[in-house]
Amino acid sequence: MQRFLTLFLSAVLVLLLGITAGQYFQREGPSEEQSERMQLLKTSFETIASYYVDPIDSTQLIDSGVQGLLRPLDPHSVYISAKRMERVEENFEGRFDGIGVSYELIDGPDGRDTLAVQSVMPGGPSAEVGLRAGDRILQIDDSTAIGLQHRQVQRLLKGPQGSTVAVDFYRPHTGERQATVITRDQIPLRSLETAFMLEQHTGFIKLNRFSRTTY
Image: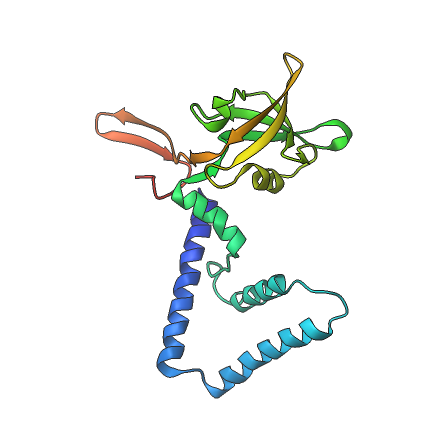
């Protein structure tokens, strides 16, 4: 939860920083020295893009430049890329579109991780097609699920609500292998882990994140 709060507050601070800077420049305009330094940034980028010996990723280069601009500031002023912001927004909204399973990567043959289902959301898309805890997902659409990393798994399993994903899985205790098609749906992210009364006047509430649905 602390990590999420840091990311969320950082996003707000970066937004406020941009608004404040925009208002400042709109009101007074950049000084001559500021204009020269901004031109230096632009010239540097154009020179690297045109003459660097190897191809460059311009998006990554610009992101690094923005991170450099914020580095001398306080620790809470950070840049969150669009791709990273998608994950932050998922946590904040308290939902995402997917197949409704939690999973873990466990050691497989040749040191390549295998994808094991930890739990299946009751009433969710995976439960409807019969996926169970303990099943091993072997293939996702046309991609093998052996040796994947977490980001790759999420990219393959998540998708727009109503879209489909083909999954091949193995059930260890029966030895059978099955193939199924799962229709993705909206998956809630529960922020409330537990809540109970300690005594007559004091309650205990445990949250794992703050999101739009936490209240």
